[in-house]
Image 1 (cartoon, helix red, strand yellow):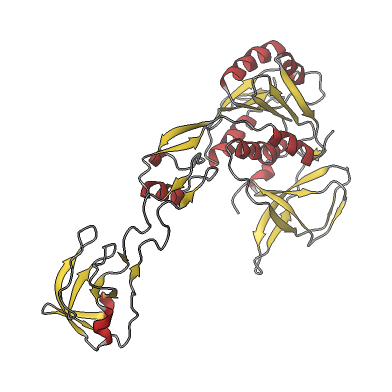
Image 2: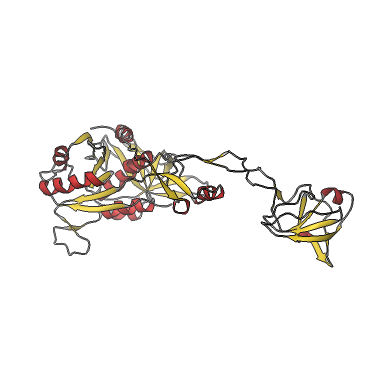
Length: 400
């Protein structure tokens, strides 16, 4: 049995490299960038007007001129109109390029317009006010985004601004989530007193979907021959396989043997943690990793967040999120020498501290509490008594 940290390292050491592909920029949101985006010109590309109003020479205001003749009205996107003298101004709109003959903008709220003239109602102004100068944000050739960045709406905006109609992104792994067991039936069917409806694979699929990743679902009965045939096909099509159930020590837990027969190397089996102790991880000869979680719903939920999602980020070359820590809000004890992933409800108190309220359940089969929890708190194996106010790492599973 290995530690959580050892399991994590083995998994990250076995990240995949699926390469990159080209996609249209307007469909790239949520993907991971696989190229460097550079400014194709200065940003902004010209001295840009930031407010609606009039453009004047500051030196004219400095000499006491307050009434300016409006020579023209200039909209954004048109060629600048130059003034001929100090007593002239240009009525100008936000986003327009300021003419070279003027250098300061006064907003409409600070002027009075009438009879073709603009009167400034301010005692003081600043030279260059109301302008966003050329190259103030970035200069031509500057890096705007780098490989490994998630393409957020802001990054997509940058991609569009430099004219990248197509963008190179990391290929997304094809994922399948497979539930196992003869006691598990389809959701729409009526169970006998000794059966349960399928939920693990749909839950995992939904978790991945909230992160922007699609996954197929499949179910395997406790039949080694069916498992062998179905999994053999999965290894030919999918880039990552998640299994729920069939990896413990029961007489009907056939998966480890079937996986071995299919050429999957076992990299570890059993992790010193609760829930999820029987977790099995291996890699097929063609490079496809297998995450075989125990079938208890809470274990699947936790292991997916603690192990599979970090593998997914590493495979995509995406930076792992910074660890989050919270303060325990109750005393508690946990006897076995295992790392304990405690279901908690995270709250932010009046001092802006992240507080973890434990949610009491009935073990890893009690998944009803997951609807109330929004995180797992990772409690170290070397302790058995945990005090209110102590700080430990948390893994978010639902929004705060």
